[in-house]
Image 1 (cartoon, rainbow, N blue to C red):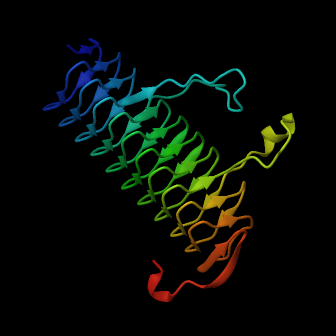
Image 2: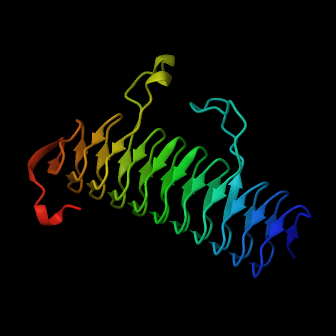
Image 3: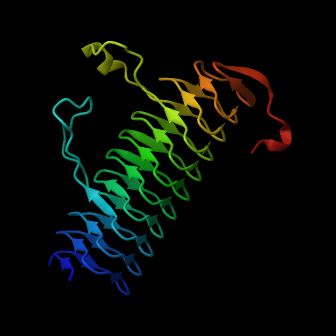
Length: 243
């Protein structure tokens, strides 16, 4: 049995699996496929042709701990999913996220509030995207990567599996750190290899190639290959490998 609130709107040819919940004010477009045991929270907006797989939770209201660095200080707007998106099984997308069309958020991923994701984006299995993150069009983030709060990934960025971004340079738990939290900025067309680590506030320049396993401690230069621990420039990226 499903629960669909009387104020929820379901478009033509939309289907709902078993034991799903659609809360008040949700607006579901046409030709949407909703799997089993899905929860669509209040006021969520789901675009035409979107698929939400089994066990997914979309539009969830965040509830930070009292000791969390990021606190909620304003009303969070409804989740907006563009048309023809795919939300994987057991994925959570929070209220306050805006997702463009034809974007895939794969199984077990988490997308927090105050996140803006472009169109034709791929967010892989078990990826975490924290709050205050912007992701551009046609960017790909592979499985098990961590995109920390206050990061920006521009268009056509590639993030390989198990990449970690960071945003806090303070060893001590001082109040001063709150005003200086800054994640990575990854410019258009940059590629970051598997298991790399990007330190807080670092800018990866356009079309930089970060080799697998690198520790990026300094801003990079455009169209260069960097590698190592810490990473250093090795050579320019070949012309035929540029966008």
